[in-house]
Image (cartoon, rainbow, N blue to C red):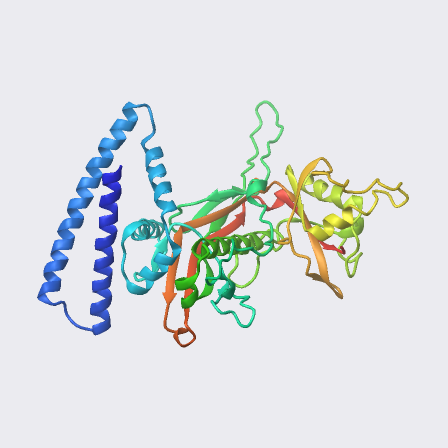
Amino acid sequence: MNKIKALKEERGRLLGELSTLQTTIEREARSMADTETNRLTEIEARLGAIKAEVETLEKLQNLAAQAAGHVASRSEEKEKSEMAKEYSFKRAIDMAISGRREGVEGEFSALASSEYQRSGVSVSAHSMKIPSEVFKRDMSATGGSNGSEGGVNVQTSVGSIIDVLLPKTVLRGLGVQQLSGLVGNLDMPTASTVPSAGWNTENGTATEKSPAFSKITFSPKRLAAYIQVSNQLMLQSSNSIDAYVRNWLLNAMAQSLETAAIKGGGSNEPTGIIANSSVNVTFAGGASSNSTNANGIAPVWADVVNLMKAVENANGEGVAYLTNPKVKAALQTIPRQASGVEGNFIWPAGGAELNGYNVATSTLVPSNLSKGTSSTLSAMIFGDFSKMAIASWGGMELTVDPYSGATAGLTNVVLNAYLDCNLLQPTAFAVCKDIVA
């Protein structure tokens, strides 16, 4: 295993040397020198030898694992997991600037490049690729007089970074499907009519009952994250700023994706649950039509029941409610009946269920929806969240620009992911989006 790892790291260094050579020749707009041509031949020969040796060693490793009754891929995944622990986001930024490709970061970049090639997504040949996801925040080492943008991380015996409170992501826990490693667009056919049969006489001709089909298309959409990192901060920070930036970006990327999956519908965004025109819609206050509540209204117990009713009337079977903390607080202070006794609230205090179903809350569920003169309305969703899928193509693309912010001592970092989300069965969901809370 160590031999395979060493060979892959050597391959990463050689690929980095090739990338540097290509960048130099393109920048100087010239032909290759004889020494460079000879070196290119040497690298190509060595890469071929490494490939053959790695294939042989992996074959032996697989046979040994099978003989021992283990699945070979498990050891490969363990090796990748160990390599991932050594991955440095800071070194990846440095390599994106210099053009080098070496070590763990170079090996992962080569792996991610292969994923992108298989997926059919075009990315820059000069960018750094990482098989993970990321995010957005501005940080500088001085950060003004109070160092609020990173200055407090420079050497003065500072403890662990205290993070801001982040919105809670919940969709994975509700059972949303994840489709990864896709190649090109993905069309998923779906039946749009209920199967039917007809009664007939013993010798009568059967009536044709042809089902109707439609399709749901997943196509890669770019989710870009931008961050400015202070050169001084990256050089002087005594905290684990490397891990902090990665984790911050990862959280921001996840929140942006989940926000789109819940609401969506904006420019270049996937269409989320709330914006999907085919989901069931109910109206707050137990109303039977949109016009009843011109500007929205406070929730009542009937709203909880009506969401369930709408899904089940469409032959769906919901598994959970999803809303925001404002609606949760309202439901915990409004009684089920207008004349109900104190304590008989729609959502019992401390309860993990609502109407017998699981319930989740997140500030990512909007509380700024508009209707009439109101622009602070909240949403509540009920449905079978396994009927939603989030798709991904390849890993993460890292592009670094050390020049635009050079006069301010800043490096611009842009990360791209290619994702999409869709409802596999929109009628498995019901939405109420005119709640005053």
